[in-house]
Length: 410
Image (cartoon, rainbow, N blue to C red):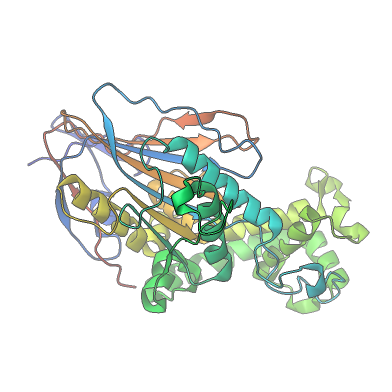
């Protein structure tokens, strides 16, 4: 059976063969780390949506264009945790110590909890006709082992499943209800939901070949800024490319209106009048994007997760029982979403914001067509989404054969 694909930008270098579109990287994508598996996919419609729920009205999303006869059969979603405190003192001379963060280093803030609560409200609004009250047979939530991902899942569930039904209220007039979630074992969790913690020799070699060049270019371009930062922060000669990027924690302090020294806002005319914090943010953006911005790097960091998602969709499509009947949710990190975005070629090259969420919806019709559409929630919180014309798989045959990973060897 031939594989018919329309790939606008997931792969590079499309080649037309016998009326169907192929790409020279399809086998690399299929292997995703030297593994292979193919399955027959007979479902009809797969929607993928990307949006940001960081503002008050960001959870309002317009109805997707669902054709007559289509019906939703499964949902999977993965989000980044909410706003958090820095992991540690951003730099030696920083006066905003741990006492500035009521819950301690790395912990979710009130703002972060609200962001995920609003994501839960969005999910309730969008899927109110699909999934009503919480039932453990219908939905499963897994998180990474980090506190911020766990608390984010709890805050989201408060918005998604309020105990409106009196029979569900365990305390009088209490709308919050304890809901189970699962944290994966450390052996499986790191490569699945927290790729920065997962050691992979193949990936490390790729990074070794590229990081030095990128670091040298950035440190040379912004030499004046780096010199200033080395002195005012107290880091001195130990201020590397990675360490400069890590100063992004200053932005977290700014967001919470903690006092800052004047050099944080100093303007640099030679760099389009950017401020010091703007330049630090650019260091962080380049540092983060460079970890996943090639096909090879993205596949080693997101292959396992992508395989997990696609394998579950396949099972649903052919009637094989999965862990939850209607929905599977992941609470994770910016690195998780960034690597997955690059693997799907839907990254905009920017940092992944807090509470950003990637949703995949599986629809079925009698035509047995398979498409993947992307939507991105406008960052300014307007009540609309941007529909991105980047269909990845469009299969017009009765059943399509797709190749996905079972595991990643790294």
